Length: 384
Image (cartoon, rainbow, N blue to C red):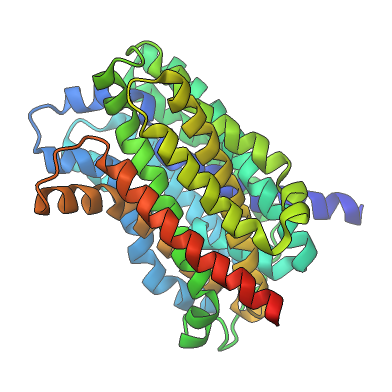
């Protein structure tokens, strides 16, 4: 009986990561149709349909520590899922861009509450060895839910863009699961707050998270446009090529523990080697084969980075700091996602660079810098 309860508690925690993966992918198949429907609206507002949830994670992170000292983990889970579900479903009945933006703010608040919990509760309820293993499961279940959601949303988008928002019904069974199996525990200690101590201990992992997600969204935001412009894929097939990266992450997440045992302290340097190799492959012009190889390499890097960085950040802090660790890591993850297009567009304009693959070049440079940083960190760990 106790074993069943522990399994269900873990499923409830993992459901948070699964739900988080639906925030963006949930509407992606219908995005162009939604943009066409609101074609007369200001383009900035239309772009916010995608970017607002990530921006709200950044906003909520400033208040999350205070909330988590006053409210229990169960209450926070239910609150996050309520915003997620209501905001998601309301998007399907919007007739104005302003109403749509408000629904994305609502879903973003829920997203901002759930993201720190998805990492923080693993660090709070499980020991170091278990965290290493479970963060690999996070990658697996997030990838699976993302793939299934894309399939379901693609089918629903064929009926109407409004039907796509039905995927957010996913939040209802998750709320029931969390209400029954997440302990009614409140971390009221002074350790549960963003402090210089937490930032210092997690700084390296937070920077790594920022760079890997800046790089990830450099691919998500540019791959289809670059591939179509080069003629390496058709409009009909680009939807089959891009998920290769997700499948690669899924497969790598399945064997993340094996990779970590073999690579030990060199796991993170290996992540950046894979990431750089991925971008160098993507920089090869007019080659579908190298594009696929690049997506596979970066998918592997992403899966290993997420599972390792999350676990390492949780292990360097105390149990009372677990939710604060989740807040720091998720702030940097969302900041990387939000700033990625702004960063590369701004730099390319400032330097008058017209190269379409500049985001790949910039990401390769950032990942190379991280390779040297984490290689040095691995060497220092050996000395200790």
